[in-house]
Image 1 (cartoon, rainbow, N blue to C red):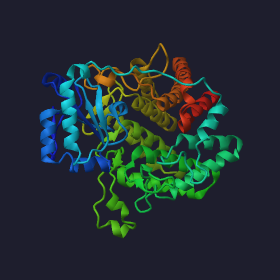
Image 2 (cartoon, helix red, strand yellow; image 1 turned 90 degrees about the vertical axis):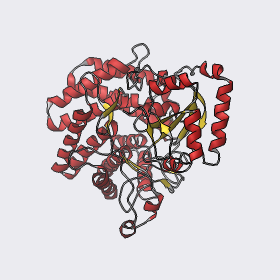
Image 3 (tube, one colour; image 1 turned 120 degrees about the vertical axis):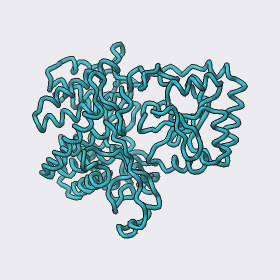
Image 4 (cartoon, rainbow, N blue to C red; image 1 turned 135 degrees about the vertical axis):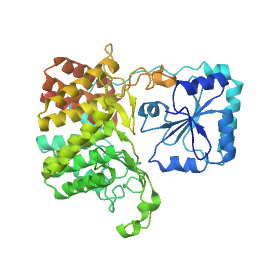
Length: 495
């Protein structure tokens, strides 16, 4: 990886790493951290305007050490430094602690903001560099019962417009999976209402692209309109699966058809038909998506698709594709799913070091929790289909790796990342702060139980139980996302 790269706008962006922060310490300059995403319209707009201004670029290069981080490539950095959305514009000390920041800074405000931060930093370097990050504190209410947590999950259901909460509206999948389980097990009428109302609202609204197919990232209004028009693989993989599952369970053909339409979008736009695997996203583009017919879109360049393949979202799509292949009796899709898993393992797996987070011609960023358990789950799904024990063994290896480098034996639960940075440097600033992501830990506990059943290794079951115990005090405060915990509770009870 180069030590820096200069964008066409003139800012000498450097990658996150020890070298950039060492330079900031040596030159006694603050860091300008820009967190963006390839699919994010506002990020491209800030590059086109604020960072493209020659005076601003010169001011940044002279008075700051500029670092650019892609939120998809480094979710661990984004989780700790995101200041309310993308782009994030954060100003840091040379030790990596936050001085100030926000999101989009328009071109007319940027010079004043830069001057103010640079002057404030120069006047209090000693104080700024002695700041310490807040200690990570795990808090939460006393554990609730399954029924009590289920009530919390559905308390924010929007009876008028479907989904959960008011606005913006995100397509939350775990609460829908829980509603489907409750309906399937006990024909629960309230769960059926939640499921049908939400799937209808999402699938036949501004959230769905009626021309090319596929779901947008989220809607800005309560009525599922005015979407942010990027399309993400993980969102579409999860929605494909819930529509197919609900269509089969409820015998509602329109849900099965919407799932098939979404799968068609994924295979047409995101899949690599030659080597296997799926690209991570397609960019937002208001002009393109405003064209409301195939004919109208032919005259507008299609939004770009990222070149990177991400381990966690590819794993999710492998599992979705295997399930869809069974629903539609499609041998070709099943073979493509297996081929895609093989590609990710060949390119991203390293013995003793788990799977890297993404591949862009080179495997990058090792030691992230979500990748290990997502890929382990996909391996178990392929093992169930092929009965090839090699996939089960790979799932075990990934589980053991996660336990070895991310498990907290003292308090239970997994941290989101290994403690050494991706390039081998000691963790910088907030990266030294341990985070135990609630949903990822709950989902990991389900995969650990599958590993225990497949391998006969009861240590996986013990760790799954302790993971759930660590997450239990947090579940009551998670709102609809507590569904991840309830689903894990139900999975444990069923084994």
